[in-house]
Length: 281
Image 1 (cartoon, rainbow, N blue to C red):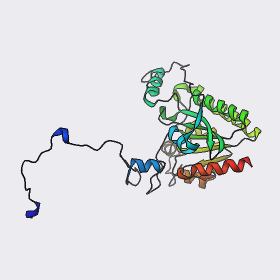
Image 2: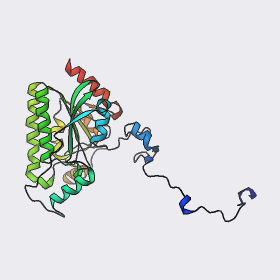
Image 3: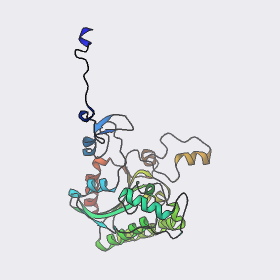
Image 4: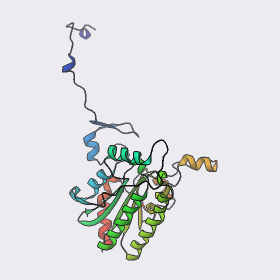
């Protein structure tokens, strides 16, 4: 073991010379626990190259993935929620909004944009889970309604990417009214013969599932997404029975006829481009 002995005593490294690995260089998959470089993970569109786990991402990443050269025009970007009920729980709703806007850099839980996908026009409404759990409030409903008006005016297909915990409790009935509002607006798309594609991502629950998320001419989902009205725990406690394996996953929902197709994120843009050409013809 002589080869293992220290040849020189007193070897030290000063604090100023010590180097630490910067944060954000690595990504550890929560599903398979494999480690990837953050750069490789991003280039694979935030999907684990080992097990296919789809990391939850927000509108900025989806716009970059979907739109040609990440070029798009954002629609209705300055809408901000009011506080008609003067709601207060642990803090005032207005304070919660201010804090979330400052922290996330978003105005509300949905962004809408217009651009091209493989050369075809498309309007995309994408929810952001980082804004109060992607909850659906008055602004989310209004942005979807105005985006549909834009689609009707320009004859442009619509994609809504759902990622939400449901209706926003701080707006009570005002948030629930968005279910009827968006559903009625989508019926105008149907009458006009303009395609609407719904993409469910993890999670798609509550009032969003009970309205626009399930009203697409084509309902698609990312693999493994949680899709349902109430969460599995609530359903289990309500019916008092154990749930089937994989209950409310995208694969389970597809098997039971509520989805048309599961599409990997890495294949999403080409899939949308093919759909848009098909609808156009």
